[in-house]
Length: 227
Image (cartoon, one colour):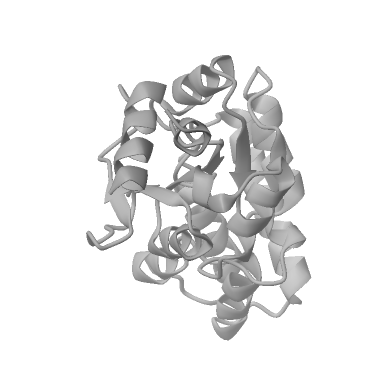
């Protein structure tokens, strides 16, 4: 076995999205959006909320402004983040199988990074709730110049771990996130939740990570890299 093949026999790292992938916080965000718009006399529909799934918070803030929220982008993000964290404080909605897979990867010495468009204080709140040291790095929405679907978030996630993004697996739930990870060059697993993701080139679809093991992930990585 060559050194190169050996190096690629398992991923150098796994890069995780957060909202909708590690935790099912999308309903919390949707509720926060609806409450904020309503407080300014506007209406926020389920269809409006779905359009923001996977988007960067500053983009979402501008959409909320267009629905009558008379606040700055930063103030909108601050209020929504605080409301979501209040809900997380009542119950952390872990996605089935997410913590188990994350912990198994750590046990095998495969480092993980969290790559989210939520702001850092939100991301660290979720990381702290894990109950174990699951992430070696966190890239948040306030760390990037370009949000998903731009590749920058996943490029930064790989760089934070000192690995090549092409040697990483990324796990995502949304089309913008999948596009970001694919553009960064990672092996990508889409695990759709609230918004369907059409099958496409450059990524695989799993219905859930529940029941999936690190070996499933390693096998997928090998098959993609050997293709």
